[in-house]
Structure formats: C-alpha cells, structure tokens
Length: 468
Image (cartoon, rainbow, N blue to C red; front, side, top):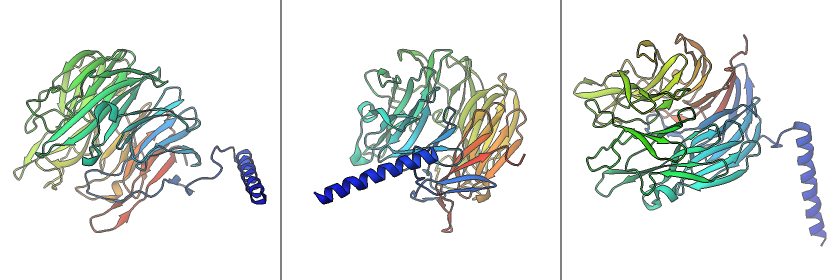
C-alpha cells in the first residue's frame, strides 16, 4: 500500500513538472528530443541516427519537408518513419513515430490543419495527422488497393500526394514486383479521400495499373487530376501504356489520356517528378527521363517540347542527364535535370558529364528559352516563393564534388544565385516560406568511396535576411 502511494506521488510530481515546463516554455514538448546548434549560418537540429548509405548508391537517404504558415514552423518527415513539427528556433513542438517504414510522401492542407504522410512498409500506410497536435486522425493502407508481398519485399507505398483547396487528397499508391523470370512488374492505383477520411473514388475502379505511377497533381480551376506513368520496363502486353491520364477530380472518371512517343535510344517516355498544373489550370509542365521538357494543355495535348539534355553516344555508350521536375510559375515553365547516367547500366560511370546535367531550365510559355542554371550536384527538389526557386543540392556521383552540397535560392527572373547555404552531407530536401525569407533543408550522411563519413541526418533553418 505504501509503495502504491509512493508511485502515485511520483506520477503526480512528474505531471506537475511537465505542466511547469509547459508554462515556462510555451512548448507542447517540454524537452527538445535532439540537440540544437545555432550560429551565423542558422539553426541545425539533429534528426537521429539513420543507416549511412554509400555515396554512389542509387537509392539514397531521403526526407520530406513542408513549411506550415499557420504554425510558423517546419513539418519534417524522415527515413525513420518519424514526423516532427519544429519551430524557427529549432525547438521541437511535437514528434510522432508513425510506423516502421520510411516516409516517402508528405502534403499539407491549405488551412494548415492536416498533414498527409505516406510510408513505404508492409502495409504502406497513409496517415492524416493533425498539424497542431501531432495526433493521427485516420489512416488508409496502400496494401488494400495495390496488394503486398512481404516475403519478396514487395512493399506498397503512397508515393505521391496532391491536395486541393477543400483539403481532399489525391494519392498515387504503388508497389514494385520482381517476377520469377527476372522481369519487373508494377501495381499502381490512385485514390481520392476527403479531409474526414472518406473514400471519394479510386482509379482504376476494379483493377490496378500495370505501370509505375510516381507523380500526380490536381487543379481546382480546371477540376482535373493528372497522373503520369514511369515504367522503365515497357512491354507490348501492358494495358496502361499511355504517358498521362487526366481525370475528373470529383469522381475519378477518365477525361483524356496522352501517349508521348519516345525518342531513341529509349523505349518509353517516363515521367517521375511531373507534370504539374499552372495556377490557372490551363497548362501542365512535365519533364521526361529522356531529357525532354514538355508543355501540355489541360487536356494533356502536347503544345511543344524541347530537349533539355539530348541523349548522346560517347565511347559506344548512350549518356544523358535524366529530366525530373516540371512546374509553371509567373516567370515561365521550369524544368530540372539530374546527374549524368549511362543508358545501358545506370550503375556504371559515364566517360564525361553531360553539359545539361544538374540544371534548372526556364522557358517562356511560348517555348522560348530563357536561361539555364547549373548546380554542382543533383537538384533533389524545388520549392517556390514569389520570384524565387529554392533547390536542395545533393550528390554528384560523377565528380564527387562534396562542396556542391547545400541549399540554393535562385532569382527566377534572371537565373542568378541569390543565396547558397552549404551542408557537409548531401542536401536531400528543401522548403521555403511563402514570403521567401525562411529556408529549411535536410542534410543526409554519406560514406564516400574512400571510406570517409560525411554529414549527418539533420534539419537546417536559415534566415535569408540575416546579416543584410
């Protein structure tokens, strides 16, 4: 009886101490889970230990990051399956361990109330998380829509999420399959859910897509959703061979579909980081892995395309800088390319770098070239503020230039570099505040070919007006 009373007293004292700390700090998390460092270069927050990947490895450590205007804070999703809300001073407001898989997608509603987060795991969960509290409001399993096979590590995942103004989420769910004969297969599906977790529709309704569907976007103005295919193994018997599928966002019915013919030496036009709608919903900008940039109308019709990185044969090997991102801003259509790769075997080094690799290209909507900004490493993702593009600069697996890593802010009108914030390890994700003042990026650790460990898994927060 005495021990029970002692335990109750200890629990009461602990609760009172938490309340006192909350009253003193105003923080929803009384203690910061990870150390925070502050200096002239901004704030740095350690995000925990993750497996260190080889610098040249194809699959690499990732992170998800979004700026939350209502909270004046950063929402960060990690490869450990953890979701953080971190304020401008690097203080942890809350932390949520969502599951056992990596977080591979993240989007927030326009009112900053909900975050949608997708994980790659045996179930492939999609979580709806209250941004203010960190509580999980509801979830879906990608396995229910595209299947799962844990025995062969065929894990499903909500690989990309787009959100409309009403807070409805449009999610590409996908699972990779390795067949017994060594060939690759794909199971994909898009679902739409409302902010309360109600299933609105699924596409296709009664089957899966036999292609990789890595990207989607939604437009309130046009009332359409677009999903793009990215099957590197393109087979005659495939049913879903088209490049783009345009759907009615209210019911998921097919409006239009577009097949974009490939260019040699490619068998298929692959889009894995685009297309995206313009603000008025009239156009789509997309980039193919074959190095082409496209402008489509809202029905998916190709209005024009340009070579950003033309495939070139060097020493009997086809090399090119794969295209990935496509956006439309007031300054024009924005496209990006990544590292130079060998067409026949992406793991083999190339004799030279393609002059169009690791670059940002801007064209007018009339197709007129404006400029090319070339980074020293891969542009991992792009975040926009009025007149600015923030880019995370990661690895250059061809030059091994470790000074390339960091976050860069580009003037979209001129292509000039406004700010560069270096990181020791590759910068894998970046986000910029709506007013363009605040910038945040996630750095990942890496093991160099000579066995040196560089960087760590941490969030950096920079004030672009500091010192000005």
